[in-house]
Amino acid sequence: MSVSSPLTPQRVSELVIANRAIRAPYYQADHDEAVRFTDLERGLQWGADAIPALLDLFRVEQDTRDDHPQGFVGFARHWRGDTLRLDFDLFSEPKESDPILVVTAISGRGGENTIVDEEFGEIELSDQVPTQEEWEERSKRYQAARRKDDTDGSAAVKAYIAALPGWKSEVATQFDEIIQREVPPVRRAVRYHQPFYGVEDQGWFASFSAFSKHVKLAFVCKSYLEPKPPSGTAPDRQALDLKQTDTLDEEQVASWVRQAADTPGMNW
Image (tube, rainbow, N blue to C red):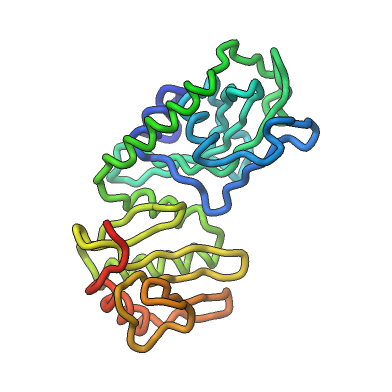
């Protein structure tokens, strides 16, 4: 699918059920500060709010911001009566038939018949407000489809890396390339909102996550690596934290990758 093709609410739903949606590294969840949301004050949640909303958008618009050339914005009615706005980018790999939805933000909008959005102006609301039971059923349907998905998640990991800013994306790309070189049959997936690397039918052996000032390269194995990485409290929690000014020691990281892949420490 080309990013220039029209994107419909139904197509978004199909991609989500196909497990082609991930949460961006710096995903934001908030309500409109100009409106008091009695029932949403405790915050909007990925599993409880974003996924059910993506499965029932009533409107999808091309993102108008210059820094989101492949971005879209969708609107859905929440079972509590308010409206949710979801921002997401499309990431496409040349050999992949379907793009990845990289959801960057979710926010609330108040209004009974219409809402006023800062980018798209006045939007007439759908009169179809789901019940709480319907909302929860969507989430269960997504989780069931996700559990059945046994395809390689390389496209999702590539989308996650591409969504990282600057030097963090470079570090993640370097780590990804080392793993591919040292473990050619590696399987990838985005689990618990971060990329994981595994050996099929044996388990996951590495992951990484990005923080405000560093990228954590983690090794998930059954025994301590030699030499031990500088961070971590157990064999399945060994890690290397890299700041922007640090240089990644490819030879050492490659050795840790090979060792971890020999004894993956997290069930498949």
